Image (cartoon, rainbow, N blue to C red; front, side, top):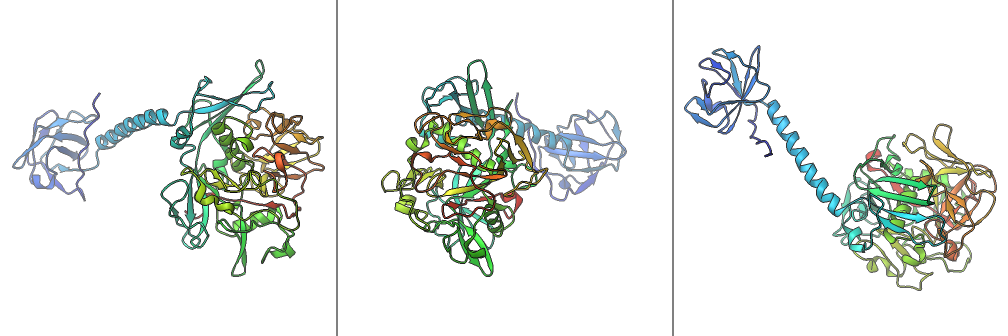
Length: 514
């Protein structure tokens, strides 16, 4: 069926009046001054005690010709002197809705071809870290290359950008890598824009198969990932941003703030970091405060934000063993004294990234940075605070509400969290099993820790030794094969400050400055 025609509007909607009676169905309509109406073909509206809408195909002096009745117009007669004008008709709105729906259907069709639902299947009964990529129906995808992900709306739209600290304006480079951007912080903080995605998880008790999917659009059984509800009062956001680099700190007048730029020393505690208040202390609440000092919508990377990236890495690489697939990261340096990791942007990594923002530095594997779609050292170099989770020694975990109505803090207040039980609590070890459930499926919380660096999730778990512990993620410069996107430690209390622990910025433009 053909799409309905649309016609130009008339600025100001000037009116004329009927010079003769007009009855519905007549093919000619006479008006006092036809110049008040647009050139044909177009629409004329009649108003009075009864209103109507008509299409005309021509003008003959002050006569409108080829008049036809539009849907919804009653059968009646309009008197001489009735107002005639080009108003915004019901026909206009309906036509635009129909065209919009048709265009959206075409967009959805093309998007489905270029950005289909994609996921992974994990055989939890196997020790192998290899994951099977699957389509929306759970059917194995035999061949998926980098080009596929670069074009996909979930993966390929992750671009580096710079947010001007004075105006809040965000600028982009020529590609996801950020060509043309100033990455030094001189023009603002370097962030990574992340388009919202929908997620679905399931676990089959009969086959021990766990499945994880992402979709760029709503679909049956999918929900918007909780990350895109964070820092916006519970309202969904179309985009979120995180720091492209580990955070550094600086004094802006008398206010200490966090920033994100290349060539900087990541901020950590207990190392005499320049201008860091409280005698060099840097706790998880300090990270939230100093990031929040930038502008509304800023804070420390949240629990759900970290988990959202973790899922995409597993899907893109088809394995839990990201240290092998992407690179070990900075994990094989000596513990040293003070801050003993590397600066952001070390080993020329900014210039070595592929256009999609992924790559490694020029140094030895294990001693050089890694970058996944614009985010450097998602794991390795320093532990990163992940705000929005508290763990107890008995295995209870409290995570920030998925609807975004909780308040992110080192210790979550009553009403701000949802609770999970049964997480590994009494042993440390490589993660070999995950919790499965409506909440747990996207949270990557361990259920067993009896694996190795080459089996299961390939990443380590440190259990809480007390109640109300926080989560750190990724590992630092001397943690070797323990490190990775799945590496978690619940050892530290909210008051902890350490030379190994840094942070990453998180920003919701809708919740703050656009």
